[in-house]
Image (tube, rainbow, N blue to C red; front, side, top):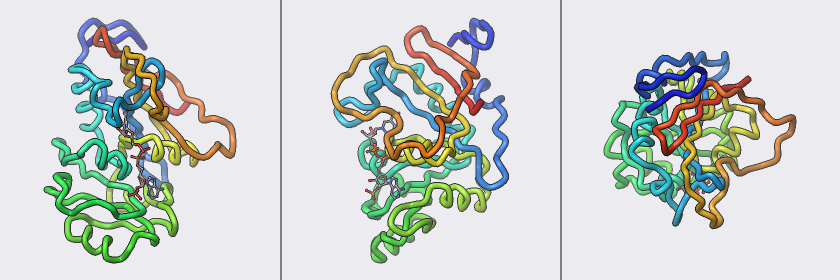
Length: 229
Ligand SMILES: NC(=O)c1ccc[n+]([C@@H]2O[C@H](COP(=O)([O-])OP(=O)(O)OC[C@H]3O[C@@H](n4cnc5c(N)ncnc54)[C@H](OP(=O)(O)O)[C@@H]3O)[C@@H](O)[C@H]2O)c1
């Protein structure tokens, strides 16, 4: 893996690169890092899953980014589509759901995880999930993502990695809660109707300006790290 920016380095270790980055948590919530892979034409899934966008280099960077996270935040749609399991890094997974439509028998719950939900979630589903996860209620009709992040901070998380999907990312963007965005660019044109990496309500204010902090490549995929400008 080669670093192109901020300066040329022929051999870099992704794990060491991402581990050395500073991620100071704001006062009222953890640092929020989003990690997504997209095709050159902006697709985030092929046949409803992201797996075929990646490659061997992607796995190393994906693992390097997970290694810096205290909690991995993910939408229930992604858990259902991608068949999530526990992390190998010790980070707990926090699944965001309003419906609570997640079987306690999922492979994910082989280790105790977090479920972030709202008042609308039926009590029976909340109770079933409480057997396999710590349940956080943040919001009425939908999870208020800002309150959810604050609750994760109160439980000791200082870096929260959001792994999508696009609808969860869209809420973080709309609420201006993204401190870092890691984008893996896959050299594919996938067409189709998969959403771009953030899909959600329009912004109330100006777009959030980011700064390109680092660009790395394995010769096929590009790995860009952007941070809030
Ligand atoms: N390219 C990539 O890096 C990447 C990464 C992740 C996912 N993906 C792809 O993205 C697709 C899934 O994305 P998606 O946008 O449909 O799903 P998503 O954001 O993962 O999940 C949407 C679901 O999350 C829950 N949710 C999200 N925000 C919520 C809120 N504020 N309050 C309560 N619940 C909330 C709801 O679950 P309930 O329905 O349970 O209420 C909602 O239906 C899949 O095709 C996946 O492969 C790609």
